[in-house]
Length: 219
Image 1 (cartoon, rainbow, N blue to C red):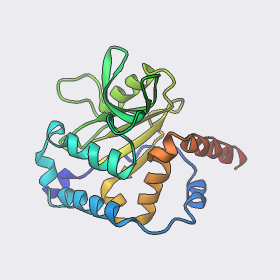
Image 2 (image 1 turned 135 degrees about the vertical axis):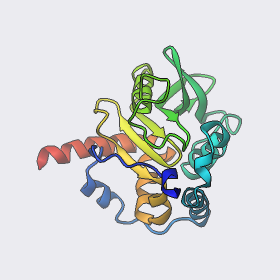
Image 3 (image 1 turned 180 degrees about the vertical axis):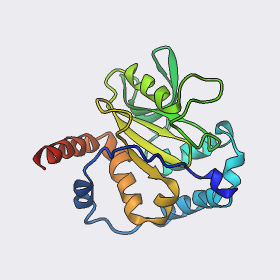
């Protein structure tokens, strides 16, 4: 029964980035900071003991955003500085993404990646939701298509995080199982390399994507 609270891994997808390139980029990575390790292990414990599966998105959305996007990945919420880098309920066309990652200030708002969040009671992100004619994957892609200048899109059910790139298909994405991120320093560093504010907002993630495409062409 506990397994039902864990992410259901999609077998039919391709990674977004070259594995060899990621491994080279992480060759100098060391351990996991204590504060991050504690955060990840505490979250993983709620998955392993099954307690998270009794909670819907609205109940744990706030703690998830704070722990993963702010404390772990380093995005800055409104009210901290004149520029902030994560905002909730971002308008995208006729809809509204749960979060947006980018650069936001009095001068201008630039969204790099819309984020769609589902609760752990949605273990399979690829199938249509009850009462809806679309899957969470389709939903976040619609937001990305309606977001000018968006480069990436992020989808999570608080059991896994997926990173997609605009211009690639829905079957090409980076998958981060949060149990693996808690248990593996390599998975932690891969998440930070690709999805941290330092990487996503600086253009490093985009550069790694371009370098991955070049590596594939050279094979």
